[in-house]
Amino acid sequence: LAAAGIPYTQIGSAAVASTNLGDYDLVITASVQGASYDDALQAELIAFEDYVNGGGALIWSGCTYGDEPDVPLGGVNGFNEGSYSTIMDDTHPLVAGVAGPDIWGSWDHHNVFTTIPGGADVIAEQQNTGLTTLYVYEINDGVVIATGMTWEIGWGEGWANGEILVNAIDYAWNYAPPCDDLDGDGYADEACGGDDCDDADAAINPGAAEVHDGVDQDCDGLVDEGFLPVGALIITEIM
Image (cartoon, rainbow, N blue to C red; front, side):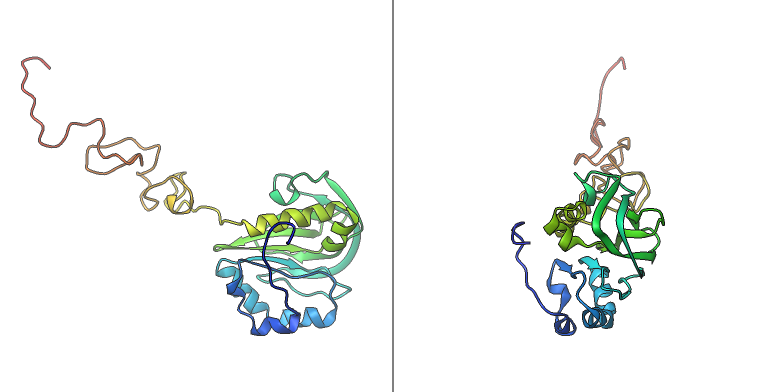
């Protein structure tokens, strides 16, 4: 974090219950911390879920010594060590620059996810079993990055999963929720970076034809361009 210029506060697991997670843009849990750590975080699972539902970015390590702590918002964890993961979504920013599809570490991961939330993006799977070792779940305006990988030691040893850790921190720190297209016209709401100036009306978007009605249909900031002003008078013998 310091290398990335990200200011941070470090607390122990016992302090989670008294910490307002909403004060932070990014929350990270560490891997392989021991049973008491995992138990403390499981006791506050709802607090982590509320944090994400409120728009927070959470990097959640499910990598343990043998425990199987669940992931906030629906991930079910299982202890199942492996040296190889296979990248399943090579377009995702978490694996940018990572040589794949198969990545190695000793161990690459300790844990896998036997159940993940519907709509989650599976980034990597355990080789041969197809069980998930890394996924991203976007919900409301927040995001969970759940990993069973040995990220910290991987970063120290120069394994591929260490590269993913660096990418994950950058992705989560700069996370912006995807833009909605509430009216289904193919253009996202300009309120979140899209270019639809009225996302409640499918007839109004940058691809719409302007109509002479006092409304900016094509979202170019102009009203009724191409039409004569209301009340204009033309006197001519030939049209």
